[in-house]
Image 1 (tube, rainbow, N blue to C red):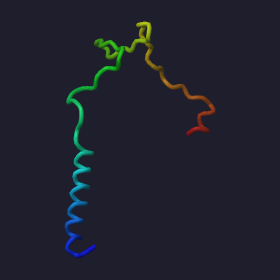
Image 2 (image 1 turned 45 degrees about the vertical axis):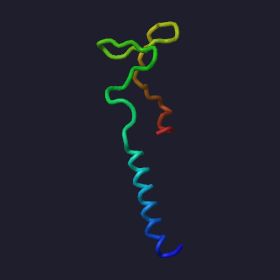
Image 3 (image 1 turned 120 degrees about the vertical axis):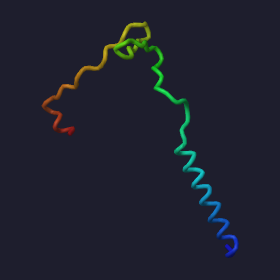
Image 4 (image 1 turned 60 degrees about the vertical axis):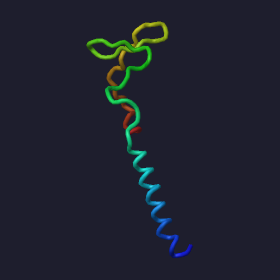
Amino acid sequence: MSSSVLPTFRLAVTGALLLGLGLTLSACGRRGPLDAPPGAVHTPQGVIELDSEGRPIAPPGQKKRLPIDWLLD
């Protein structure tokens, strides 16, 4: 490349990188709380998820440790 094209090329590359960074960090979507998943019902205790037949799904219980868990840790 000739010496007169090099500063223009650097400026173009820097501008493209800054534009890409700006678009990456920009917010997209709506501002506010997250939407409930489809099939969920709002109650004062929180969101209750329903199965395909309209029955509530039980929340997950506490994780119980097993003697063999030390292999996975």
